Structures are given as structure tokens and as C-alpha cells.
Amino acid sequence: MTYLLNALQARAGEFITLRRDIHQHPELAFEEHRTAALVADKLEGWGYAVERGIGGTGVVGTLVRGTGGKRLGIRADMDALPIDEASGAEWASVHSGVMHACGHDGHTAMLLAAARHLAEQGEFDGTLHLIFQPAEEGGGGALRMMDDGLFERFPCDAVFAMHNMPGIPQGRLVLRDGAAMASSDYATITLHGIGGHGAMPQRAADPIVAAASIVMTLQTIVARNIDPLHAAVVTVGALHAGKANNVIPASATLELSVRALDREVRATLERRIKALVAAQAESFGVSARIEWKPGYAVLVNTPAETDFAREVATELVGAEQVTRQGPPLTGSEDFAFMLERVPGSYVLIGNGVGEGGCMVHNPGYDFNDRNIAVGSAYWVLLTERFLAQAR
Image (cartoon, rainbow, N blue to C red; front, side, top):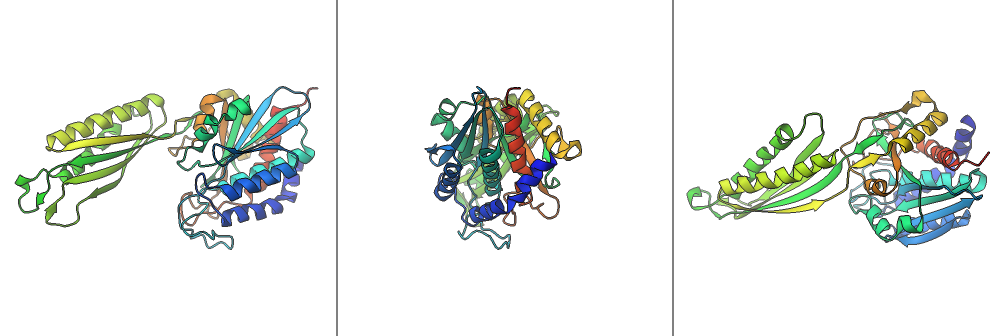
């Protein structure tokens, strides 16, 4: 597939420029108006039938060739994060407090590069739906698009997506069937006690002591309630209480992040967290209110579609540049919801080790532009193989 990589490399400069333009003008969840308009205008100019405003700011471009009945969906995300950029790049964000710290600018550029090649030179027989999604970063944009009739209006027999991953050599493709990314749930625990003077604790009901005990007790759930062969994470990311060293406050608040790679483990975590918090609070004479906020589902790649994605990757870059069954990740991704409705697979592309190795969600992160050619070539080949012309 050297010829395909060479063809996409030859016009990569145009899409590197586009990627850096998007990077300079990042937009938060459901605010991707400029990015969505850019995507839609490009697709229309290349001959795609385009629908705008799906799920808020989502865009779908459709290209039909021949009379084949198969239908393929490929998804890219468009939103940025509320982070002050510190990459030092010439194309750094011009918007204070907002940056593309996860590479969605690169994901969009890769799919647009593939879109142009497929419109001009693609050889396939069937229907291609290119899905540009808003609000992946905690906003549940996939669900919003689906609630707006995404798969009813644009039926797909399979759907695929790709995400860059720092720490993996640039351009290496990583596949995994089964559970590939964790669910993500969030809890706010508010403890109500009785405030008082720090010198007379016997006349108060101290929520800080209760909170401290809860933090430690929660760590026993993964150690003692979850099968050691199953992954789970319970993180207390914030504890807010009090303002003075001689005042026992009347309340304390904890913020939790909870993750699992199995649906049953996910349910167990919720059940045990709620039970332990209630019991611990009662033992310290305070009351507890738990606000449980379900997040993203476990992302499960279907075997047949992942096998297909592996073969495409191997054909494109060679077996030595493909990890056929990579490890699962405890990060989360709302593409999981699409995979609950339509079979498909989520592919990782290495962003680099050293240069390009800065982790996502970091102020110094930047997408590796050398992936524009590899990623777009992958989408082209996957489309042509999935929607293969009848022989």
C-alpha cells in the first residue's frame, strides 16, 4: 500500500495547515460552530451530501457510489478542552483557557483528508457516512447525535473511529477486540455534620473525620470486592471542607471518578460505594447525600469488525507496525454508545514517543502532524475494503 500512503502524503500539507487552523481556534463541547462550518463546507465542495446541526453541532457527510447495499460509518470528534495551552507552537490556541489537548483537531483533519481522496479517487460500491461529532469530552455528543436520529437517518452496517495515543511510536496502529476502554461514572458525596469550635470537638459532629475515613475505606472496594483479574478504579479527586484551623465545619464534599472495564464490575462499584459511604457516615454521626452521575459506557469492540480493521492496518503499514491486541485503557470515550447500537471498532494510532509523547489533556500536548497521511490512508483503505466493488 505504499502508493496509497505516498498519495496521501503528497497532499498532507494542505491538511496539516487545516489542522493547525482548527488548533488555533478551539471550541468547547456543543460550541464547535466554526469547526462544524469548516467541515461541512469542505465536504460540500467535494460533492458530499451534507447534513448540519445533528445533535447540536454535529455534521454528517454522505457519499454514494454504485449500487452496493453496504453502509459504512466513520466518526471523528471535533471539540476541545478547557485548558490553557503551553505547547509553545506557532499555531497555539488564540482563545485563552481553551485548547485542543486531545488531538480532535488531528482526528478531524485525518478524516477530511480521507474524504477528499475518496471523493476524487475512491473506488467503492456502497454508502459512506462521515460522522463529525461534537462534545466527546464529557458532553456525550455521541448520545445527542443518536437521540437526533443519527443511525435512523444514516444507517450503518459498521462504524469505526480512531484516536491518537502518546507513548506509542508515531503511526503505529493498535487494535483490540472486546472491552477496550473503561466506563466512567462520577459521584458527589456531601456530608452534613454539626459545626463547632476546634477546641471542643465533643460538641460537634465532624464531617472532615468522616470524609477522611471514607477516602480510605473506598480504596478497599477494588482490593476486596472486585475480582483481581478485573480492572477498576475509584479515585477521590477532590475533598472540600472548612476554612480555618480552629473551626469544625458543618459539611464536607468529596468528588469521585469511578471506572471499570466490565458492566457487572461497574454495577458492583456503584453498589459498594453507596453502601460504604452510608455506613461510614452513620458511624461518625453525620449524614451523607450521594449524587451519582452516570458517564460513558464500557467501549466494547466487536470481534468481526476488529478482525477486519486489523487486516486493513496490516495491509497498509505492515505487520511490524501493527499491535493486533493491545491492552485496554482506563480512559473513557463516548464512541462506546455508538458501538452499543452498531458493530464496529475503535483504533489507536501512535502519536509518538519523545516528540509527540506528551500525554493528552496536558497543556503541552500537540497532535503529531505526521499522522495525517497514515490516518487518512487508513480510512481510505478501510472504506474501499469494506465497500468493495463486486467482482
